[in-house]
Image (cartoon, rainbow, N blue to C red):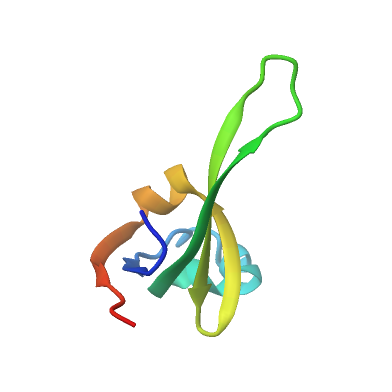
Length: 80
């Protein structure tokens, strides 16, 4: 997952429509990766989580890489 990669998101929360209302990207559609970064969680054991920022319908959203990977299909790379 790199900046400029294009993915098709699959519906994530069919059982919870109220979550889809809060986060429209969970209904599915295209997502363009803007940035990936690793964040350290504030814990004594030094846990890290990979975060992905992506563009969906003109808005930027943030999701964990693990959750994004489970619900996305790689389409291709933006050539701009």
